[in-house]
Amino acid sequence: MKLFELGNITMTSSAISIIAGHKVAIGDLLDRHEKGDYGEVSEVDWRENTLALLPESVERVMSVYTVGSAKLWVITDPDRKVTTLLTEEDF
Image (tube, rainbow, N blue to C red; front, top):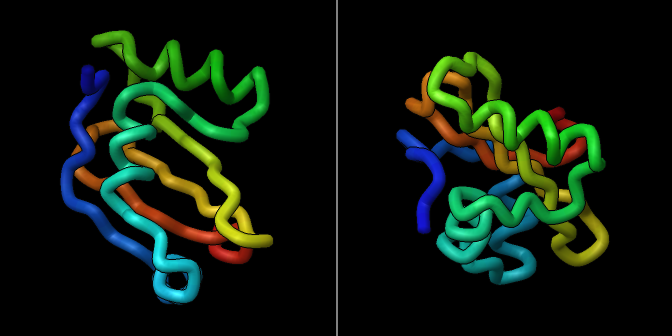
C-alpha cells in the first residue's frame, strides 16, 4: 500500500549514471520508497519519515539504497510534488 504520493520524478546526472550502469529498475526503488521501505536510513531518519507521513507534517521523506558500491538517495519533497533520485555527492 502506498503511504504517500511521489509527484514528478527527477534525477541528477550522477544518479542516472549509477542507475544506467547497474541496470537498476527505478520503479522498484520508488515502489519501496512509497511503501515505507526506506532502505538504509538511520533510526532517527526512519522516525522522521514516520512523522513526515502525518497530515499536518511539512517534512520530506527520505530513503537510501545501496546500488553497487554507491548510495542512492530518494527524497520526496514535503509538498509531495517532486521526488528526486540523487547520489551522496549530490546530497
